[in-house]
Image 1 (cartoon, helix red, strand yellow):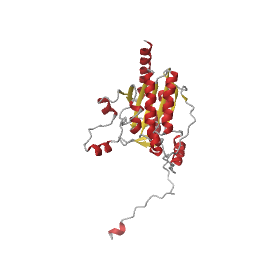
Image 2 (cartoon, rainbow, N blue to C red; image 1 turned 135 degrees about the horizontal axis):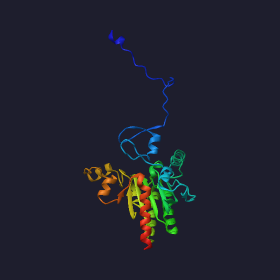
Image 3 (cartoon, one colour; image 1 turned 120 degrees about the horizontal axis):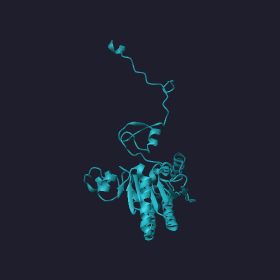
Image 4 (tube, rainbow, N blue to C red; image 1 turned 45 degrees about the horizontal axis):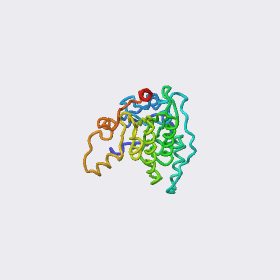
Amino acid sequence: MIVDKIKKRELPQKNKKTNIDIPIGKWVKCTKCKEIIYREHLRSNLNICPNCGHYFRMHINKRLELITDEGTYKKFDLNIETTNPLNIEEYPKKMKALREKTDLPEAVTAGTAKINGEDVVLCIMDSGFLMGSMGVVVGEKITYAIEQAIKLKLPIIIFSVSGGARMQEGIMSLMQMAKTSAAIAKLNKEGLLYISVLTDPTYGGVTASFASLGDIILSEPEAMIGFAGPRVIEQTIKQELPEGFQTAEFLLEHGFIDKIVERKDMKNFLHKLIVMHKKKGSE
């Protein structure tokens, strides 16, 4: 019978030896154009897809290399530890695993640095650490950085990327919105420059506090920025949102941000803003 002539396809055996050698973790798929990219090519292209120009998220260390003069970044020595105010059993374990995976103590780093020779206070958030959520330690580090900018009479630059407040820390995380905003108000009273740089994504309590309070608000291309996600907003207001809603380009058009700056131009553009503000202050 014809059925007898149909051979059953053999499934590949896990232990079967093969001459094909594809290193694990060497390739990444672009979420926009779906092309497979060699990871080293992506890194050498500033974490931007060489095929379609899509911006991948960037680790704190890579961002420091891109923005600061080599060897000038000095991290603030803050001996503070993340607590577990709600006594969530899995939270400490998750934090430990994230520290090992990301090689970061928390979702933000803060310190002083030079940008083309100009001294600044710099904060950079990382989406790889619990989606850059703002807990007590993140809020304290950012507040301390702002206070140091006031003390040292330096401009401050904050690169934001976040899903919002860290709900594992309950009301304590929400209090960081008021604390960071109050610190920014003191900075503004001193007449010091604050540049806020929004990267993909910047949402929730971070958007609703210090990320939106910059004297100048910049963004990377195609970054998603907002308070709640588009789906939540549509369900709440029962209306269809306009195309491109919450993208950096949409927000630039509607006056929420001042300029979209490409990653390769960011360092020189920040330097230009710092020098312009410095000259104005000396007049």
